[in-house]
Length: 398
Image 1 (tube, one colour):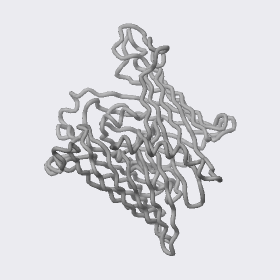
Image 2 (cartoon, helix red, strand yellow):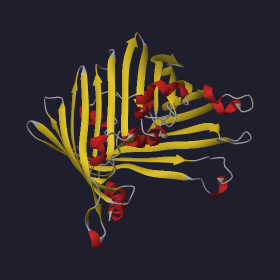
Image 3 (cartoon, one colour):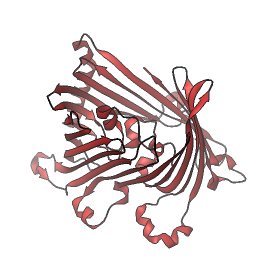
Image 4 (cartoon, one colour):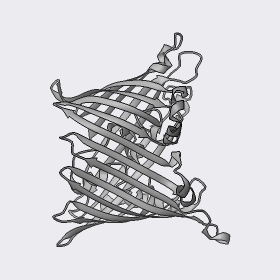
């Protein structure tokens, strides 16, 4: 049933622009190549992976618009199967239609969507409804659009209703949507959301519950424990002062297990004090993220760790405004916050020290991003090249 609804909605999006004479489109696209070595190979075997996305907004009128975002994750482009097909994943991150209605003291935004609309864990909701600058951590940057930075991925097909209070920096919303879990159960979800933006405090929180339902006609009903999901983003201070950035999330934690303990694979924590010294910025981070989230990010490789990011975004280069920085991390493969209780044994755990210098600048009406990642724990006399990866990316407006 969900697949049929998604197909109908996708076809509707394809033909919707023809229904409006004054459709206006804005958006941007990006792609990134990752140069690395095939793991555990006996000889030098380079590989090139590709990640990319395209996103845009169709304005049909002053009060009706839609968002569209697609992402692509492709495996080794230079493998033996290059001419016969490349393993890749294409994902519909968001297809949505928003209808705006103005009232005396509030503005209502009603939406229908497939994918994820204003997902928690990003600053998209805050930017769309309050027009603020980006506040997300650089640690959660991804070249897969929405997919790489979600606290919990409330993906599916559904409707939303958001109220923004005129004259007050506050907004509240409700989301109703359906999706399928890993056991192919139909899950009916309901989320509530509240956000506020003040000069020295930004807050965005969402919480909800999902009811897994067995769609078999012979045994229709709730057959699994309901699941809880919570997401929080908070910024104390702002981008022009010393500040503290916080994020936490719990994704589909069954009520029974949630009462006893948090499950690391379903939990997300990021604490980041930020310091501004002239034109130089320094971000100190401590994090515990699900491995499936880490796999989509470009700056971190392991689920548990700490990092320091020193950079400046006020550099002039030929003569574009540019960003130059270096990020150093100390992290632990296959560990989580739950392992912190054995803090005395941390010295025996496998760990990695990774240094990532990076540079971004304007280029050909877009932005060019280059970074080199050096993993000091992979240096070996015979396979020293395993320690290096290089990323080359480009984003541009459409």
